[in-house]
Length: 371
Image (cartoon, rainbow, N blue to C red):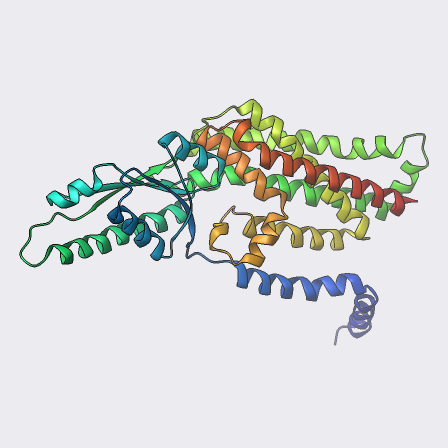
């Protein structure tokens, strides 16, 4: 046997047992993530919020609405009075689909020449929109069979034509949906992980205490540590935007200056979260483990990869507590839909609250930890 191997092995196990926080994270984090993500991740998209513009207002048009609802893929969340209102609701994110039934719907059915209806789908998320398009086709088929039965055998009734119009991503390209979200994910990964590691590294080396006793204020110390990461974050964002446009032809329909301005609240929130991690952990290994524990929900529960509508309610609640969830709405709203502040103010307000609350908590914890 190799000389000293047994003694060294025993020493490492003793050291591991003494570091109970790291041991708990090594065992607990994978277990928690398995249960959480195994339960939360769903690819079958159902209950897409839909609004209805019923210009026919007849029993037959209400029957079509019921058929749409009974597919289980749509939840009727309201009505609209005009197409402009439909656009506003979809841009605000309160609806992801719309059913438009024209005034001549009943007259076309009675004449047997084939009635038409239109389903508008927010196709920014290809997974959700594909499910919605399939459900619309199923509803059209079911309604057509019902109309044929009512007309009786031998009648020549044209089937119902439900025309689906995908908005914002008509080709249903996954890159159009994923690439803008990569900006938010990379910013979260970089800001949380590097900020927490940088401060813990200073503590491990003993240089953080030396900096604290210098004439530099603690606020100045913190700003000096995090401002470079703000600059790096904006550089990363710019690189992804340029490459996304050049390589994947990602549309940039909105105001880029507005997007850069709103990004500041998201950057501050993640920097504060990284600072908070540094006040809880004592070593770089602990900081890395805890940072990845926080990053994984951002990737899987925020709507970056999987539609939140398909997740169970507890997973949606967790996603609602993540800054990335709201930043993705801003990213995709500005880049893909071309919306402005009037549609994004709620997400901006929530991000601002995250940034303010997390920075206050982090500063408080940082002061107590250093003291």
